[in-house]
Image (tube, rainbow, N blue to C red):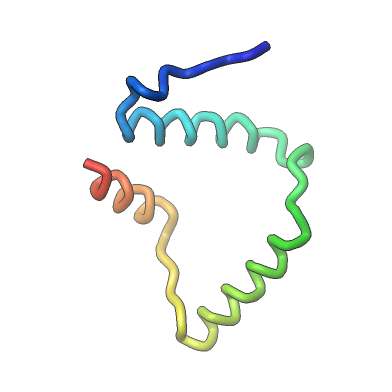
Length: 72
């Protein structure tokens, strides 16, 4: 089955909501989503950057809120 969305007529907010819905659906069966090997390397590098104080992170809900506000 091929599905298509009217991307050229969707607002940024509608596109982000569609992405969230797709990800939520894919995440329901996490065991079927294999993470590429390089993800581990990137996560390790980022953890080291946070530990050394070079980087910080924020709560995912807060990040989504900030992205939504910036896109308006």
